[in-house]
Image (cartoon, rainbow, N blue to C red):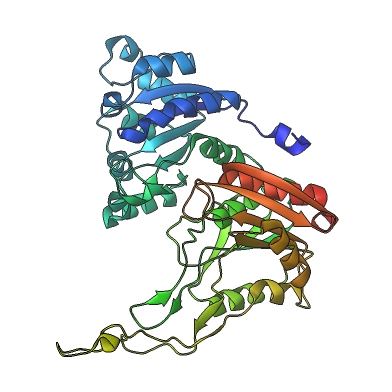
Length: 421
């Protein structure tokens, strides 16, 4: 652990953890452990719905304090216990934060212990949402979240992925270690950390190249690795700009975001953002785009019953041209960042391909990952990277993308003098 990491903890924080109803409530037990590992003192409030998923005894054992769940507890409320709890807390963290609890807080309801505490306390409020993805995207939920953020609430997540209901999308509770990291990061004074004063540009996600108003060429990149890098760079003190392809991910705290769709738009945005100190090209940019985009939907030919086999099996020929090579253009630019890092998604010959890309594009480092491996790469919350630079290499992960992102940035700072210049 380096000197900066050793200073990062939640020592002195008194965290009131609100646990609301939902299957993700089971992760709150691990969150209590992680918070205490970070030297925070923790007390837990369960909603009535949460008690159907998790038990108070578990949280009492992990936190070392009695668990509260009702405004109508005669022993606790004899001395206005909810007021005492609200004054005790330096932070109120609700994880998981259900759609119901978010709605209550946005509209100022106070019909249970947790919502009443949130009205009384002056502590920082942090929400880690967890719900079905359709509930998350509902305009009412989005409006409620926006209202709370405007009032100063900190939002952590939600993550994107498979859900207990069998659907896939945003709504997963952020993993406990990532929640703790976000809480720690919000304590770090602005402008501090090993990347203080550095301007970092990150590209993330896929690009979509339109064939017509309905169809496009794209890939499976979720953008999670690039977003994790942007978040980690901000936590380490950098001034971060994130250029995002079409993804369904929330903007990391403290990060300036530019949304694009096509490779040419991502290239223009990246070049316009120069000068920067560090560029990390984590986006999965399409190598080809249609030479022409049809203004109307491309129709299949209408065949009659007498059509021959050749006509029935006829295909569609696309005329494709190369997209801009963003990484190479930035590496060759007159305002080239001091450190240029590329990503390479490989299915074979990983080391050979990565070192060839390192030399051909004249960049400072290549972070390569093998796609198609279960649990890593596209559509996953974890990753493993092989990092190559002139005269060295290192292996990172497998671990959560949040952890891999931080490890990569610290590795670059330790091994590449240009990043420290």
